[in-house]
Length: 200
Image (cartoon, rainbow, N blue to C red; front, side, top):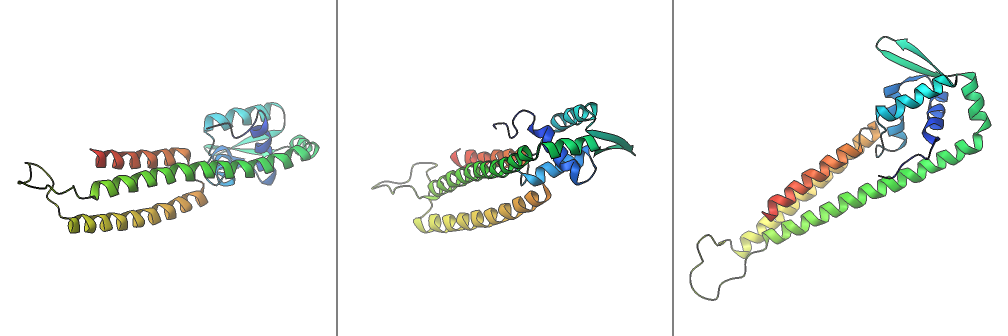
């Protein structure tokens, strides 16, 4: 995946989020995932070093709250945001464009996997060409065209149900900010496994 933020932009966007309210690190990660519709969620190893640098620069403070560390923007941080309003506006616009681009990529990838799966299922359900004479060779398929047609309809129904359920769950995860690239990769691996089973 290409970088979502250019150099220094994630640091600035963390200030944007903290200007809304103080948050601990995991809340910031979730907030970023929500802004990106779940298609991009930064790792802790990406976010925490930047928070540390913001603290070193006096733009945020941190305070222990039980086992969590809560970060809050300082006046100096708000002054920096005010001085960089044009850059913040461009950044917000860039986030919107990135969400569209990432979502298009996910849709294209999942759509291609589904098309390939449907083609493989249809090919596997297609009855073998009938022999002109002689008995079926040992181990040859003996299904009739009607059986093949019924099986194909059943498979298509299963696919339609599966697609609806996956889409609904994906939307729920996107709303909660948990539709991560790892989840999409796991879905892709599962679909690849089904395709491999059919080909075998």
